[in-house]
Each structure stands twice: as C-alpha cells, then as structure tokens.
Amino acid sequence: MVETLLRNNLAWAERKRAQDPEFFSRLAAQQTPRYLWIGCADSRVPANEIIGLDPGEVFVHRNIANLCPPADSNFLSVLQFATEQLKVRDVLVTGHYGCGGVRAAVAGERLGLIDHWLQPIRDVYDEHVCDLKAIADEVAREDRLCELNVLAQVRAVAQNPFVHEAWRRGQELEVHGLIYSVRDGILNHLDVSVSGFDDLKKLFPDRPSALIGASV
Ligand SMILES: [Zn+2]
Image (cartoon, rainbow, N blue to C red):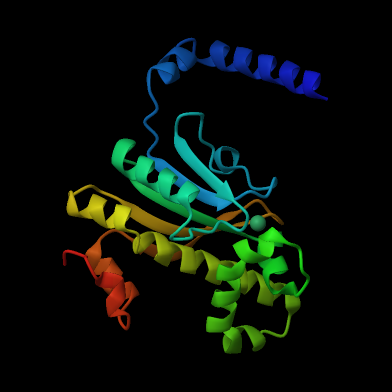
C-alpha cells in the first residue's frame, strides 16, 4: 500500500535528520555525486544500497540489462549531464548475474518491444558464441554472458564522444566494469577500467574506428 510507503518514508527522513540535522538542507543546495552508476532496472539491484552510499553520492541511470546504446537519448542525456555538469569521476557500469534481460535476449521467446532493446546482447552473444558454447553449465554460461555484456557496455561508454570530450578537457574520468551477484549480494570488479585515450588504445588494438576523433 502507498500509505505504508509514505509512513516508511517519514520514519526514514526522521532517522536521517536525527543522525545529521543538516543532511537535507545540504542536499537541497546542490548535488555533487562522485559516481555515475549505470545498472539494470532489476528490483534486486538498488544502486545506493549495494554500495553503501547516501542520497547525493551517486547519480543513477538504470534500464533493462544495463545497456549503453549509442543512440539512446535517455542514456546520452544522463551521460552528458553527469560528465559535463556534475563532473563525476567514476562511471560504474554494473551488470548482475541472473539478469532476466540477458536471459531473455538469447532465450528465443518473443516478448515485444524489449526484443528490440535487447539486440545489443545478442550481438555480444554472436561475438563470443564459441567461448559461450564451450561452457557446459547453463547457469555459468548465462553468468559469463552477463559479464561479457558489462564489458561491451564499458567499451560503449569509453567510445562515447561525451567521455572523449571530458578527457580532452583534462577532466579525471574513469569507466569501470562491475558485476553484482543477486545470490550473495557481492559486487566484483571485472578488472576493466578505462581512464583515458591510452587505455582506450589498449582496449581496441584492432579497431581504429574506436579512436577516430580521439586526441591521442
Ligand atoms: Zn538485469
């Protein structure tokens, strides 16, 4: 019931004020989050809670299967605002194991509009089909596709002109790939971080088009 939610909210706001009387007045003045979180809309993956951050500390963009499509105006608006106005320092592209979006992308069922949205995951699947088929266990195979999807989205963010513009301005901005497990609540780094054009070159040794327009 919505009334329950409102009661929960009142209790939460009172707790916050009791811990820090200036908390809301400080936040009302401005937001200065260090992080941009790009994650899945899945209800089991709430950004602030997982990484222990308060309101005001992480700018959040969520969609089904944590995608960063280069022509999605919602994602692009978030990325531009986060890099140009908020000047976030870290972009956390965060996938999760057991992602229903990733599963649906390759399950073969027709679901409607979401089939179009999930096409980038099928592209990732095609690119890695041999490695994926070599994984006998179905859950492990799906988990690997979730990881590969994060890596692909990190590449998409690292290739984005807004990110390149930030680097050209000399702004500190690092893109990370993370994966969360809904099974144990643990968030892991996928050991991919891109903090400038040198990293970008290493990430795309065989794809010169990724560096077009980059000031290297
Ligand atoms: Zn998901």
